[in-house]
Length: 118
Image 1 (tube, rainbow, N blue to C red):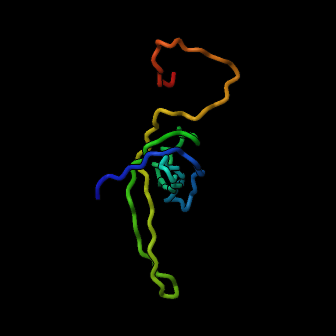
Image 2: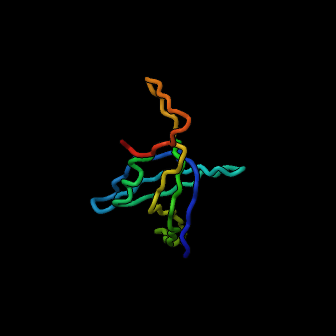
Image 3: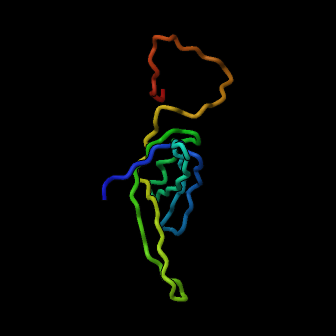
């Protein structure tokens, strides 16, 4: 299967859920910027849960993911199928969410934006 990507804005970031001592997951929702926006839920697992630590709601991102499918048979014998979008890379894009600041800063028009964290 080829690499799958989706670009959009972070709508929801849920806390990490510890399912067992050997498995944890974290779900998040990305809103597409299409004419008819879609709300797409992804999950990260294990060490990939930390990918969301530096991401904020409202942040524009590009999510690389794998499509996972599985079969489950209920105790009554009914077979059901489930899909999961498993994110393995999240890249922040240019538009950061607006954050209220207590002081006003100005940047001369001829300086380029600096994305460095320091």
